[in-house]
Amino acid sequence: MKFGVIVFPGSNCDEDLIYVLKNVLDQDVVKLWHKDHDLKGCDFVFLPGGFSYGDYLRSGAIARFSPIMESVMNHAEKGGFVMGICNGFQILTESHLLPGALIRNTAQKFNCKNVYLKPEHNNSPLTSKLDLKKAYKIPIAHGEGRYFADAKTLKELKSNDQILFRYCDENGSVSDSANPNGSLENIAGICNKNKNVFGMMPHPERASDPDLGNTDGKALFDSILALIEA
Image 1 (cartoon, rainbow, N blue to C red):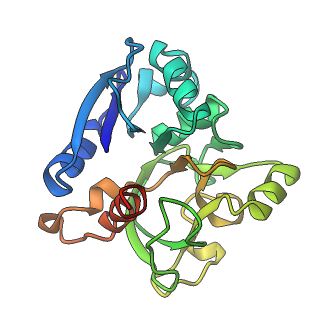
Image 2: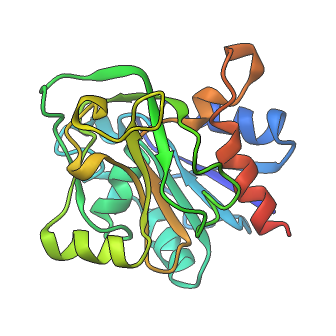
């Protein structure tokens, strides 16, 4: 399994992802520059967090037109794995690789703190090995993280098991008080119908190293490796 991490102007979590994939998980990983078209034979492509192109227009709206995104879309259409974290999730919705949109937090402020996530099911590579009874503590850092979709899209997400995570409290209870940004039905992460494209606002790469005092995020990466390398 070969992993690629795309670097856009303004990416600031690319090195975090590379560190976790290479040093924590001992995987083959390469950087992919946004102006290139070559995915360098990567099986799994990550779009990291940050502020691509400064988010001056709308988060992810300009990065969607980076040359490498054509290759990413082709990769996804052929069944290749793609995952966007935070700004990467925003880019995937702007690229229509994932449904819905990420809009301004209800508080209209940048939100940076630890939150808890409840996996919805084990029917995806990202959640296949997760404990459905556990609340995973994962950091967030975003100003436009409120997931929104129309009623038809929400119905499809539910019927196709495309909702991966919901915000919850430390006991796993999904409630308005546990929702850090006003996301529709506490949605924190989704996937496409084919379950090969994933997006989430929280940062699992920031909770994967024992030196940080929290390895809940590593469970997501372990889940990917366990299923894909089986």
